[in-house]
Image 1 (cartoon, rainbow, N blue to C red):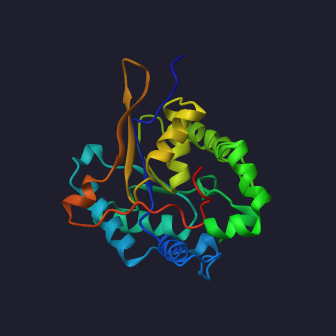
Image 2: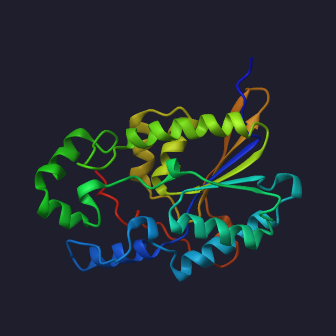
Length: 252
C-alpha cells in the first residue's frame, strides 16, 4: 500500500516581526538582552512584515484556482497567525471554504533560560553553555528549559503524519517559523544532520520565503519544488529580509 501524501505542501516562514527588528537593534548596540516586552508567543509582525505577508498573498491569488491552498495550518504564535490572515485576505482565500487549523506543534523552538538574550548576552551570562553548544552542535544542544533541533523534529514528525493522514491529495499551506522550515526540510528531504546545518549556516530562511513540495506519482512521494522562494515579494517591490529568529541562539 502506497504512502498517502498531500498533493502540494507549502511551508512559509512568517513575515518580519517586531522581535526580528528588536533583536537586530540589540545585537548592533552590543546589549545583553533583547528589549521587547511581549512574550515570544505574542510578538506581532512589523509594518514591513505585514507588507510581506500581503505580497505573498498576491502570489497565491494569481495561481490557478486548482492550485491554491485548500488547508492552512499555522503556528499559534501571533506573528504566524497574522501572516496567515493577511496572506489569505490578499489571496482571496475564503475561510469558509479553506480549512484553517492552528497547531501548537508548529510553535517556535523554545530557548529556555536563553530566552531574550543576545549572542553577546549568552556568552557573558552563560559562557559554559556557549562552549557546550559549540562542542555538542546546534542540532543536539538543548539549553536548560528549552529544546534542541531534535526535539522540534520529534514534534514535527507527528505533524507530518497528521497532514498525510487527514489531508491526503489536498493542497496544504503551513505558516510557521525559521526552525520549522529547516526541520521540515530535514524530514521531507530525508537529510542528514550535516546537510541541514550546512543550509542553515549558508543563509537564514527569508521572511515569507516559500519552500514547497509536490506529489510525484511516479516516485510515490513528495518532490522538492521551491526552496526559500522570494520572487513573490520582489515582484511586488517588497523588501526581502533574512533576520534570524528574535530569540535565536548564535550560529556555530
